[in-house]
Length: 120
Image (cartoon, rainbow, N blue to C red):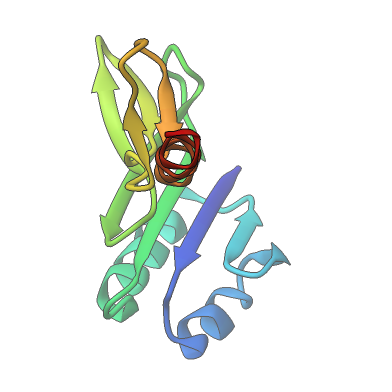
């Protein structure tokens, strides 16, 4: 089993992938292909991605039972944590740490400042 997730790639690349894989959701391709076809599809994606990005996930016989790799600019980052591959989301620029140790959005901070100024 293999999954390809494409972000901001040319439509032509998506069209080529539909020859071997199904596209249940825009930019998400799923199929069962041999290792040789998987490698060739990966090379095709890396060559045709331009300014976007691609993440590939496939079945294997490791501890997690799958492996992942990425190329280009994607919204998520693959990190290795003691031999386990995990996905890291980038920090939200609209969220900043609060003094209480939690996290507050910039909008919530602005609201507090406005209400504090109105009380005085």
